[in-house]
Image (cartoon, rainbow, N blue to C red; front, side, top):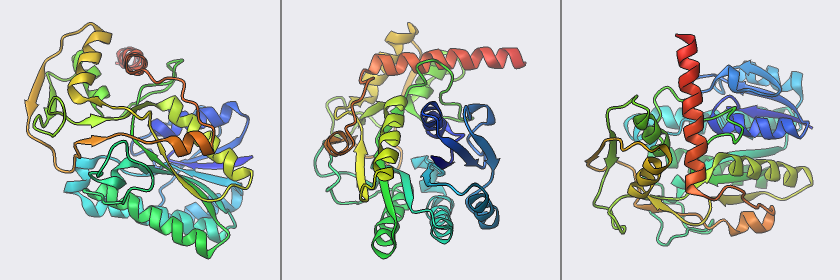
Length: 330
């Protein structure tokens, strides 16, 4: 089938493009390359464009005529969203609104949408299920929660079906070491830890050690990017077979603290890098762990890489690959 993937040159998007390409789908990747990379698009055709450019977006839709859309185009940094809320509402909410308008006007009725566990804010109970109240505590989460409300309203008003996947903490790299995180200034804990181990940063900062958790640091549910990619393929197949609109969590159902992740990174790399403990960042909840039973039951999702050391090992192999690329380019 013909699938248009927005943000498909980025970290998660490129892994999903890989998975869809391996299944033989006809793909068009629409990405402004603000955080993505042309080399990361392993399958399909890349068009450089922004969701704010409605003229180009509609032109691409009318020429490619996709059967469905998978949307990854968004800004994702919690701390930055607190500093630049208008940018996040503009890119994440208004940008997706532009996408949905073009989809409706060109007759495209199926969407797999990238959402986030940040819509829950500080949940009353963990693991958190999809029925928990949406109470985001930062503009990033709020921008995504607004999109989910738009999707729900649209599906009631139009012949339009979607699956919104609420991600928990995505990490790791392609098991064949062809793709991985390549942000210019990464904020993800595992990537920052590994770059510190590799010498790019002098020390790794730990933001907050006074949270109401066992060791005082935040707890997150870390999921391998290829397991998350598999969930997107299953969601697309579900919609292609006529499935109704759904919202699902995607995580493993257990979490690790910041300190536990750091110890695992030191174990995998064999490097005892420097760590600095500092104050909390704004917008960080103490713990986020997924109840993914709906995803497992509805879409028959069976994760393959639920192992923190394995996740970190694939990310470390990717970091070494990136370093070799940089050395060759220098």
